[in-house]
Image 1 (tube, rainbow, N blue to C red):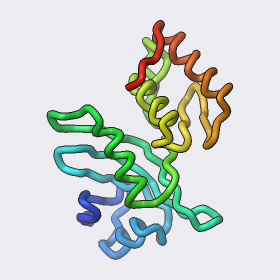
Image 2: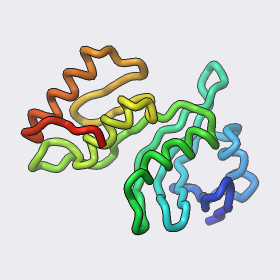
Image 3: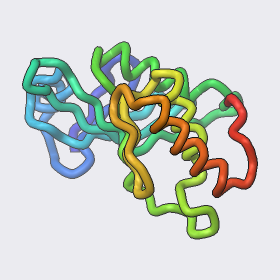
Image 4: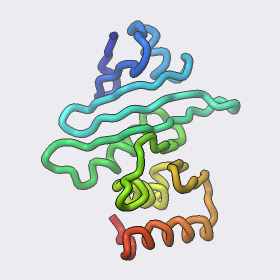
Length: 158
């Protein structure tokens, strides 16, 4: 399986075996939609897909993001800003992971909700709710109430 270093990260196709030229075409936003793995060594890694929308803008769907290294605080935000900068597109988070049965959603949900509120992701899609781009304040309040009711406490700024 081909991999390439591009924009400070190691990239490779997740499901298919793309040539280096095909991988670069996908990364530049001109190829077919592919799920890609990426890693910035010692900082973060994840999986995403890229596609062009009907209006020609790029859409990034993030399936997984994991921070690494000793200094983890702020690394998730850094990764999201980095993705937005290199691809110049909207970031949609889609949760492929099953929720934790003890709390009813993935344990990182408070973080992702905060990233949505801060505008670092444009949409949040999980098993229990969906926040579209430009959700209303009522929708945000409903999701926050849901998360807080499950956690049993108020969400604090992360």
